[in-house]
Image (tube, rainbow, N blue to C red; front, side, top):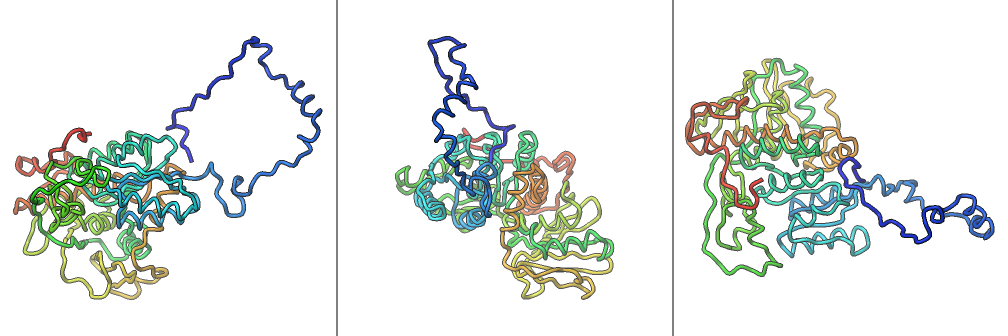
Length: 449
């Protein structure tokens, strides 16, 4: 599927003639006479396949979304599997700095389509330069998410981007502004926005069935912020196997060490304001805090106060709703990524196994069928539908921007080990130079975009 408003028309070679314009014109009467003279040409039945017409359940080529992938590892392979099962998707290319992953994704795509057509690139810019690609799946490490998304938007691609999508407040604002300016479709990979148990819990909060909403609770999966590590230098592999410089991308340079190649957590070199990860409240909070923002009616803002007390982070929205980030005290058995919404007259709690618990069984009437395991299928489908209609997806760039800002501001409070106040209108910590410096980080050339 090609978006005509964002594609440069292809100029076809013009037919050259030495006999003048009049002789070059193909006269309609002459054509019919010649065709009727052959007889058999017009008598022959013209067969068009059902697939070409989009019949028999097939998707016509004109309605297909041509997809590329950038940085497809473990999580990305799962996402790609969700895309490949959609009949209106055609996956044609992968870009990855690791040869092993390029080959694995090519095998996955070629096996699906029964051919050898999937192209491989080491540099994402080569993939983005293809004008036949409509959208990209971005599943690199967090270090690359914002930069890759910005490059994709500038190249006229829509994008489904894994989380956390932005590592700091400056990236949040810049990426959201880029998506608005380029009018691209952006879906953050916070797939729980598309799952019925979480949506139902938010519905209870929005419709007043819990009474006036007072407190929302999110699991951050760790309240600590450390800098990325600097491991001893080891010989770099050949660039075709692992492009270390491209792997670092926007991050500050450091010597190659194989332990850093999958650095997305604290132990492997991630962490707050580090080379590869977001750390602290951002890694897991990009899911759970996002759901709390949705419930609190705060999709276009961030918390205004932050304070760590013991092993919990307490924050507050301007509308008076409190946000508590905690890893303890959850109802057992509900699974990972729990959230809890508390109002003046009731509460609801849910997580990844699809069950809901509430202060009253009456609150759970109409909750619908249970779907556990946090599948991304519904979220992927929502993205694809929006690529076609140009509507805003559920986890669009502005939604992702503000939930990530709340997480990043909490990280800064954790890192400085003191309470902070934040102004969502200016996106600054008023009068706090030390905190304001942590809203961004140095970006390595040529990735400062």
